[in-house]
Image (tube, rainbow, N blue to C red; front, side, top):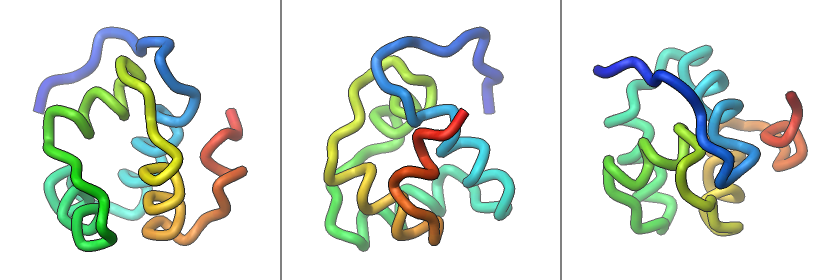
Amino acid sequence: MKTRKSLGTANLVGAKIAKLRTAVSISQKDFIAKIQVAGVDINPTSYSKLEGQTRIATDKEIYAIAKILGVSVDKLFEK
């Protein structure tokens, strides 16, 4: 996996999602599968851009991701 040089500014939650996902040792591939099972249509490129903050995160994605991680939506917005 490539390392990201810098984060974008398209969303506020991407870096926190990446941090929380890696803290529970879930690979991007497995996490994407969980998001898809939750009913959110997302592909690996789109998810990577979400984590890299180079694309907007939808409310549906944020809600599903928070649920999968077992955290509140507010937690995703904490620095």
